Image (cartoon, rainbow, N blue to C red; front, side, top):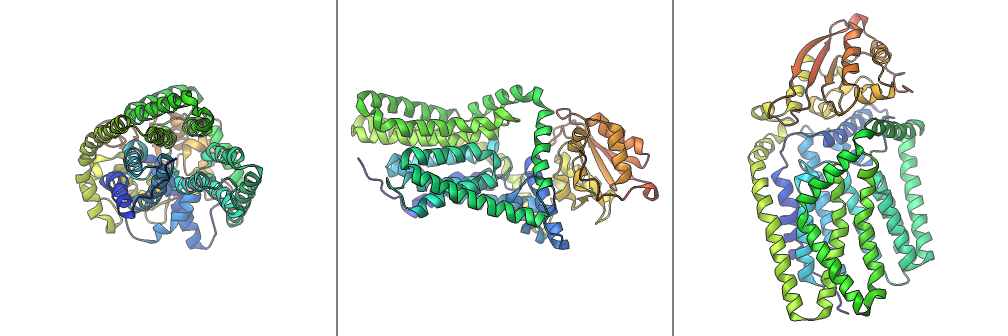
Length: 526
């Protein structure tokens, strides 16, 4: 068998610059998006709570990644771009480990360069990262990939430190991205099958200790565990509210991801055919365990979009397994030691690389002029005025800033949490941060929400016209029924602006003497 030859750092760096950094830089200054806004909101309230000396806010799910990046709010910069830049650095580090994994798996430097370049370039496209930072997936990739590399390069009887470290890294993966539990479980079971019970239990011990320590520290900083537990229950309740859309969203997102990543599927299919053909020649016993592992690594990520709400980025995680299949197939071809097969593989993968690169670079190039404008204004802490009209988020944020004073509070709906970091305002109570979640917890009762708003009255409220989430009409009715607010602006849900469907009405508190300030008791709405 061929021994893997380590690719030089300069070549790996070139691959990372072209396949990870370049596509992310091109969209670094793109307009604000919803998903990144959720993470920035949690980082914002964490930073504000720390600054007041109150510890961590006892609100929401674990949100370890926003906690680790909350320090960004200490600087007067555009926090959206700052988060994207940090996430780009983390994605680059994860990309480096990914390259080394592919290198180990295909046992050939040429294959490692081309396969890594193709799959990393695909993984860092807007379909998966949107404007450069979407969620904690790439942060979770870093410990996951390190654990995978440690497992793939482990001797038949690995030492305790390696097995314990793998468990620790898999625990960190789950803490950063809870929905990666199935992948972590697959990794631990892979250790059991390939390295025996001793390593398996050592990994379990490492994971358990890491998880208990991190969660314990966070619970102490939050002041308890009940709100954390109920946050996961509430998340399940919210997803259940759109159960009727689950199948439609899954197949729609799967189809889009399939069309955008057809080259990766073709490469993996060719690799799978190659491996199966080789198995018929008497190598099935040697090939089967690894083949099953990469197939499971491809399919296990489908659990997340199938069990909650499917979006294209969920299917991007499948590319990791497809890359492993492609690398494994490359190794098999190289072990055949036939010039015609090697030449065909090199020619085919070169065409694949060119086929995915140029069309996507052309599309990314359209984003650069706007990114350049936003990057030029990075140190101002905001967005250039000339691009405000291109985004419903920026338009709404401008109205809210003009209608409120620093230190005043607000509430939004439709999961438009990005408006908090865009305006610098905070919620009156964490339970009222997203009124769509609140109304779902109140069983879509406008009268109950009205009573809550009478007890705790934010200075500004934005109601949503988003129809994919229930409760929009009830929220608007509840705000009007309080008699405390007047409508000051409408953000239309038409036009060609970014998030043009995220329209709504903005209300301003006009009867402050009649408003409620009993906000500390709002958190428990059950």
